[in-house]
Image 1 (cartoon, rainbow, N blue to C red):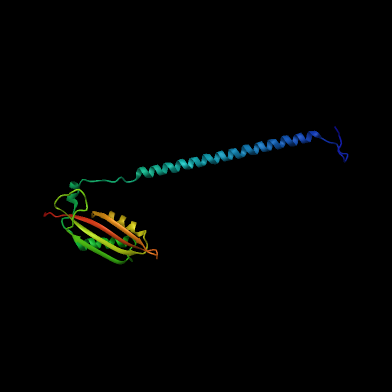
Image 2 (cartoon, rainbow, N blue to C red):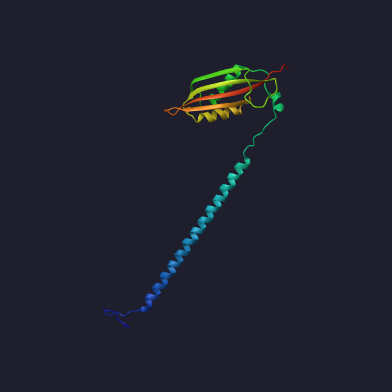
Length: 187
């Protein structure tokens, strides 16, 4: 083997070995650093996922449970008479609260003494009032707010049918059939 290159400089073979060892150590250290960084990142993401899952489970557990009452327990709390004006005022109040105060073509039709909307018979003193409500709203999302506000009232309403027809301008025609009840007894 030659000790000198073509230019007459002395060839040092040991420098190449040092360079190769240094390059191997640098690649190994870089690989170790990247793996450690990714493992730390994965641990943080797993911790965040565990926190989110815990939050979701807490929210699901805290959801209000539906309470069902026997009809006999509800009868004393039903009103003894029905006032069309009072119900009409409540419906107007709910429309205002739900952002549908500007609804067009609002029609409310009351029918007293109609048949029960339920399959099971109730007490003979319970009377039913059918309310047919139709209107044109500008924002269909307000319909759900309307129903939530209606359910939040003290009066018991039974939503029998809800029909929504979407319009080309982004609004909707809404038709709702409700029932309310009163206990026709003399106090």
